[in-house]
Length: 159
Image 1 (cartoon, rainbow, N blue to C red):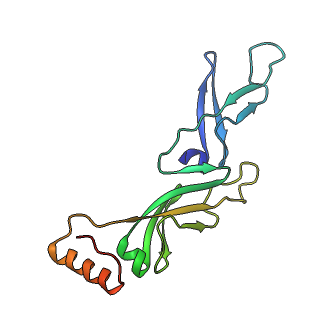
Image 2 (image 1 turned 90 degrees about the vertical axis):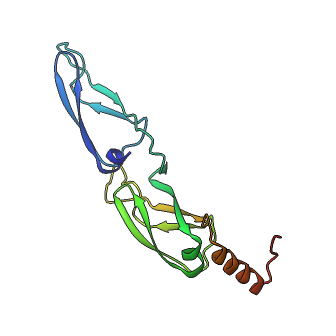
């Protein structure tokens, strides 16, 4: 998927010869590349057709030129706001998490999606779905602090 994002080249072994094929950024899974005059070894060579297959990256979901990814955010950052790191196909970036963000909220990162295959100056967006992580293995003191917070907010407290 990273190579489809940034572009790549491949050497195709056609048994009688090898051919280097350049693939532009933004190619989609299932797209057909037409390589002119590189088909069969007949006097009137035809075109070589190659079907592109892109390996799925489990961290990212592609919809056209937009990318969707899940971003874990601690309960503390979700409540207080702050920064968190988001992995993109072009590297990672830090984003601001607004104070009080809800789990499932989607933040749009403009221009961090796939480049358009026909016009690489046009880029899709990256959508970061917020997944709030709950702290595990709390100490007795931490549990008590959470109970006090729940009482202050008049939230029901389990027995």
